[in-house]
Length: 560
Image (cartoon, one colour):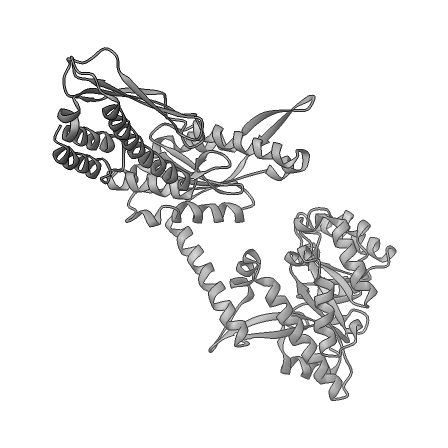
């Protein structure tokens, strides 16, 4: 063998076998061309390969594989030379070389063939590791299904084929998984999550995909004709999990947003429709499933615009406080007021109904509540400095605050910064389903009471467990919703309203709780409320919410 010529052939072999390849098929094609460069000189007749790798979350689709890698001639020696390489994770790669018929490799040639085998193994390994790395980037390794990158990569392929519009994106959040975390240790709860994820992933066809976004959130890309069945499936799923000496059964529903992908212009819009529908489903009290519409998009965009404008507006103090007087029923004297916020943007006043519900959902309402408290304290501080008498002002606090363990401390800091006596502030809470944790609510009220801040419950009677509210929370004042105040005109349910209102009033009195009726609009209502012993009233019969200057004019008169 010409050493110089063979050296050139080996260089050619290495150049080709180490060339760029992204798939095993591309590697195999490179290897055929590389072996062609040296096969004649080394008398290589045939090369076989065998691959065995352990199955993992990233390689569940790979089976043991045997294949003919290269054939120079069918006339080969029967006794081959096999070269084995461990993959490092328990797998095995075997490359078997056959010499041409009638030729036997000496030791030096055997060593050279061994070098070829190692280079071929390295080429395959590089592609396999690249493939595994790519799959790891596209997979949620904790549950073994695609992550958001995997979903987007799948959607990109569909988009490239022009079929993405035939699919529907479904964004969903599991209900009740917190319960699993309560009744099972962490590792076992993770196993239930893995079982859930794989049940959902296995429920779709090979042309569809389910991915995990993180936590309890998932997204599915299913063909539109299968979307309804998939929604029904994830709306009511049972998982059986054996634990210790018992079998636990978990039932899972989901909050679901559904968005058809017909007409989307790029893959970047993939999640937009389903996530908007999901947000609407979360906000809905009547259904756990929402289907995207263009009207939803407009509403969500309006909400986002309002929230963006809110942060600018609060810095520029565009929010102003109005005061609605509270009047003692017995003598029609002003005894206090409720602070109500208005948004003054340029030359227009934005009514609360256009921004309060949006800020409530977003959580920004908490920042606005403290802004109002600060403005009220500033108002009272200015009266103190002027030597004028103070009035008790109630400030509304959203149910969102109940989750804040430092709420009382933060309220105190605002009041004390203005040196206002605590007894002139009242925190007004709205009865709601969120307040059904009466232990937490009761502690909040008790903590406020210890620092001389009274509390009232707004819209009493419209909530979920009003009697429990009275029984379990030490409130100072009940504000009865106007829907409970009997109207002077005759109507079918009037007698029931009278009975309910008078019994609520009597019950509150016996419990030592003061009563204020809101929404009083007529003289007849006022006289009725005075007769049944209502302590205070508030409503348009006396005054609407007033700007500070007009409110002060009323206070200077002092009565109606």
